[in-house]
Image (cartoon, rainbow, N blue to C red; front, side):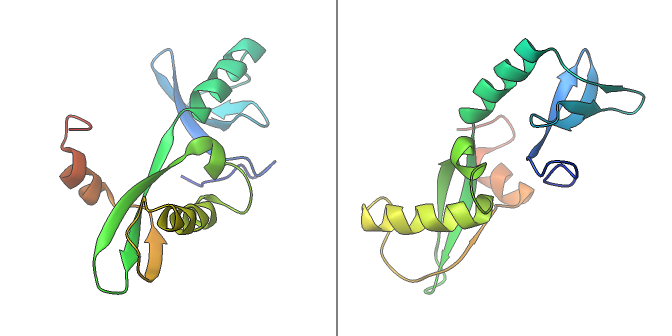
Length: 127
């Protein structure tokens, strides 16, 4: 799935619409499924915007010494500016200065793989 809307550049998200998965963006309010293209009522779009702002996206900071540390960035911050990975790099640097991440040279910031998420939290969610 592409990460951004090809019309407006807003982040794409997947929702369940009465049992049918739809992919769309809050910017254009165009949602596509296998057999359906719709626009949601404005109150639904507002509720999705509010919900999305509360989500956190996790990233992994890889250090020069080979260690890794997991940290989370609010989705509302990731949706602004140059992109989620760049925002995560900025947040990692700020968190190091504040003592929330260990000091040391961060060589790479990346999203965790599905396998890493399962290993961190198990199949039943956060543990």
